[in-house]
Length: 98
Image 1 (cartoon, helix red, strand yellow):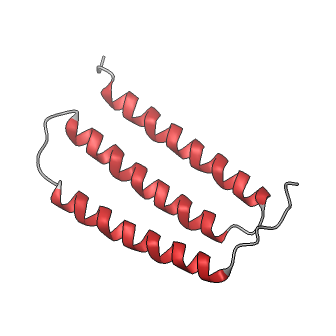
Image 2 (cartoon, rainbow, N blue to C red; image 1 turned 45 degrees about the vertical axis):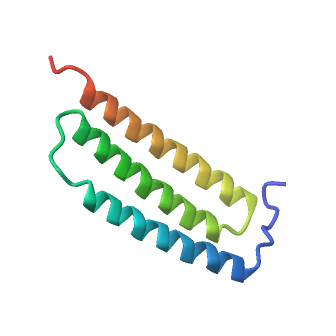
């Protein structure tokens, strides 16, 4: 079951890629517009949001190219690992300095 091929037509994969590109541009405009001084932890939260969006878009790009279920599982594991890493960094930054 893990090695089962994903039968996704190439035009669908191309549509997904174009949609991801457009979404990335939209978020880029959003984050550029949101670049203003925020009091802590607002600046940190915005940075985390930007990293999460970038990670998610990269995951979506890779997922759109996946050829089998084993690759999908590996991509999902890596995506979750990165999300946990980002959240951990955020929590460390929020923790009071001793």
